Length: 263
Image 1: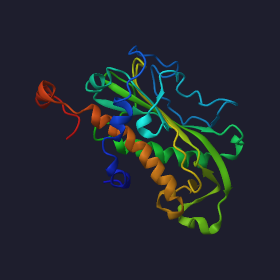
Image 2: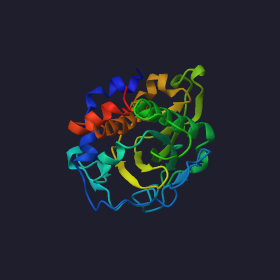
Image 3: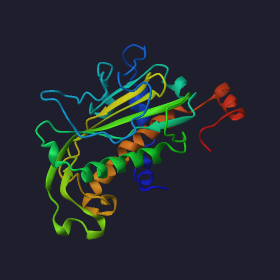
């Protein structure tokens, strides 16, 4: 069992509260402009939050998102009224490459490829680990296949990594990446139609100390806060999938006689 599952075991049911008790807006699904037909085949480049904007623009539409007071108002959530019904019909999932948006006043050129890949590879792996025994991950969109899109928004460049900050075998980065003020924007859509099923913007401020300074940062104690943050974000998606697959009565009987995503 991976480390994040033990760390966040006490969070069982939290995502269910986040998404499924905050049903807002109309139930009409939307089709995001750039997510309808295929998953990106190459890692996206680093982008920048537009000046004066609260959000990155990654989700294209934020109007349906509302503060979830059960979480102190730090998270904005949306779940379509058919979310539970829709999720029960899916059999696989595509997890898109993670996008990165640096803070408006950050010099994006200082985020080299090693730094970008370090952030996105870990988070992408954490997401795959979180959902893989619920929905088998696949590389391409298809019928009855979900698509998970996610972006790290507000990444900043930290200072140079001191020799004592990370052992040589952890491959220190040239400059640390600060995720203390990062917000995560995520959504689940139908991989063929782009129909939005659920979305979340997590605006929790991690504060000082949430930095990534090495390629193998997950095993360096100095960067534990960053590791745990990535693991928590991944676990919230899994909690939503778990809650959405809780079947009772006739639904459970039909599931027992046919396909069950959890073994």
